[in-house]
Length: 261
Image (cartoon, rainbow, N blue to C red; front, side, top):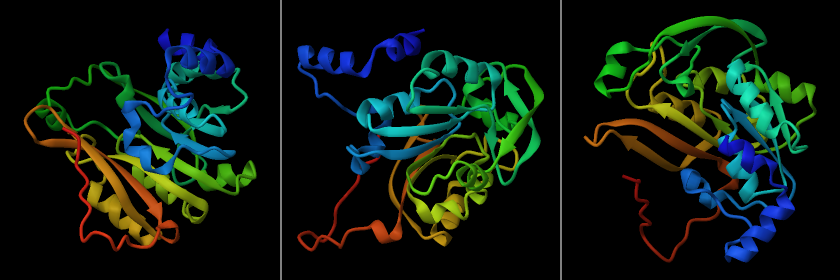
């Protein structure tokens, strides 16, 4: 409901409200401050959102970078319908009722009734969920349509992408493998990946790092979370294409980055 109300406020009205409240016209929501160093982007650009759920990520991105155009993929019908209800009338948002993977196909999708934001093409590893005191609830399956980033971008003439965001619950490498051709034209990739094996067959964050290195990217920033016991569960990794890296700053020997608690 809150997302729907936010979406109903026209961008011009949002700007006026922010002026009255003394807030910046555009700002990055704290949920995504890991992205602070790659924006705001003040020119037209493309964002791909793999695993959009109800649209919170791209809502926050467009609030910060209103010149963006988002192509958002969500295979769960209920979540897709919620995103469509909130953002379907926004010309900057293109919602796609499909999952992403290596190719155009149909796959079995696991729906976790106790945590629908954690739906996955992979089966949950119950022992890992029990260890972090998260409940999957009943797990049901359905068949969903899948495409690849390479095929989608070719079909829609998407030549350049500022940011690819991936939150697909263990299916990260499949999404990235389906983007091998497009990655050469993607500037940044933000991918949520497990440190604990929450899904059977999911890659480790190290495997994702190796894959991205092989594709010509370097790790730019990261954040991770735990359940109050300092056993890290998942991490958001922000990668940048190598040729976009600026020269090394010679004014200091080391520049430290602190991970959030």
